[in-house]
Image 1 (cartoon, rainbow over the protein chains, first blue to last red):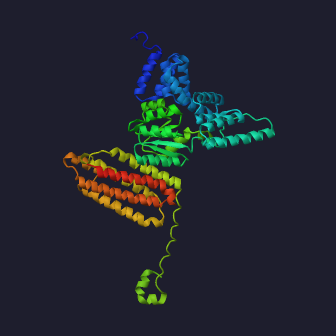
Image 2 (cartoon, each protein chain N blue to C red):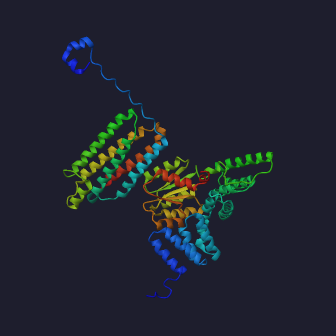
Image 3 (cartoon, rainbow over the protein chains, first blue to last red):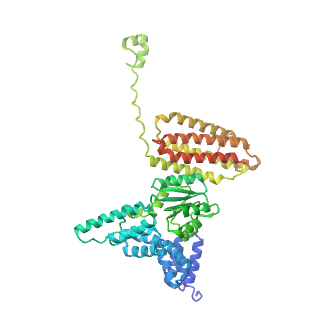
Length: 311
Length: 191
C-alpha cells in the first residue's frame, strides 16, 4: 500500500527539534544532541536549534561554537551573550588542553576581554601565549587583580628566568605547547573554596576533602549566605548542593559565575539529563551524585582547574 | 617421646626427662604499618558522608510511622562502620577502644533485638508485617537509637586513634563530632 506523500521524506529542522524535545524529555541526552546536530546541519539559520544544542553540548567548546553561531545570527541575543561568556573560558581551557593553540588563544583572549577581572583567564592565556614577554604581561594583569596570587608571582619569575636564559642563547623560541608556568598550574588550587550545603557535617567533609588539595574552605548554609560569602571572598572553586534553603544550587552557580567563571561542582541526589542541561545553562562544570565520594570530588575539581593541563 | 608414653611413665617421666617441651610459639605478628593519613582520612570522609546522607534523609520523620526506617538506618550504618573496623588493621594499643566499641555495638544490637518480634528475621519485613497497627514504643526506639549513637561514637574514637597524630586527625574529629551532635539532636527531637 502506498504511503502518504512525504511520509518518508527527509524530516525538516522543525521535525528534528520536536524529536529532540521528546528525546530530552526521555532524558536521552545523546540522542537529543544528535538530533540537534542534524537540525543545525539542515537549517544553519535556526537560532533555536543552535541554542538548544549549546545546552546539551558535549563540551564547552561545542557549546561555545553553538552560542557563537546564535550570536552570528542574532548579535543581540541576550541569553547567548550571557551564556557564551560563561562557557568561553572553559572552551579556551579545553582547547589549551587539546593543544589547539590558535583556538585556545582566540577564546581566552575573548574571555579576558569579556571579563578583564578574571584572573584565571589571564593565567591560562599566559600559558598558551607565544612569548614569555607577553606571558609576563598577562600574569601581571592576574596579579593586579589578585595580589595574593602566588601562582602569578611564580609564573612571572619562571618566565623572567626563561627570558634571561633566552637572551643569553639567542632568539626566544615560540612556545610549542601550552605550558603554563609552574606556579600558574596551581592557579585555582590553594584559593578559597566556597562550600554550600545545608548539612554542617557535609560541609566539613567537603572542606576536608578540598583542603587536601590546598583549598581553604569557606562555608555557607544557604543561598543568601553563599552569595554574601562569594561577594566577600571571591571563590576559586564552588561546590554546592543542588537543594539549598532559600533557593537552589543552580541559581547560586549562575549568580556566582556572573561575576567570574569559577569552576562549579554540584552535589545532587539525582543526576538526570534535565538536571545536567539545567546545570550546563547555569554554568555547572560537574554533577556529582550524593553521597559524597572524596576521590570523585577531587577529580572533578582538578579536572576543572588549570592544573589539568599538566596532567 | 610421645605424650602417651609420658602418661604411662607418670611422674617418673618428668623426673627422668623433665616436663614435655611446649611447641615453640610463633613469633608475634609485626604491628601493622601506619596508615597513609590522606587515604585513611578519605576513607573516613566517604564513610561519614554516607552516614550523613542517610541521616539527612530521615530528618523530620515522625517517630510513630518512621520507627522502622530509623532503626533500619541505625542497623545499616553500624554495619558499615563495623565493616570498616574489621577491614582495618588497627595497632594493638587500640585494643581497649575496640573492645569498648564492640561492647557498645552489642548493647545496641540487644536493644534492637528486644524491639524485634521473635524469632527475628529481616527487620524491614517484620515491621512491614506489623504496620501501623502495632507501633513500636517510642521511648524504647529512642533508647535504642541512643545506644546506636554511643556505639558509633566508640567506633569513631577507634578510627581517630588510628591517625598518627592529633593534628592529622583534627579535620575528621570535627566532622565526626558534628555528625554525632546533630544525630543526638535528631534523636532528641523525634516526636
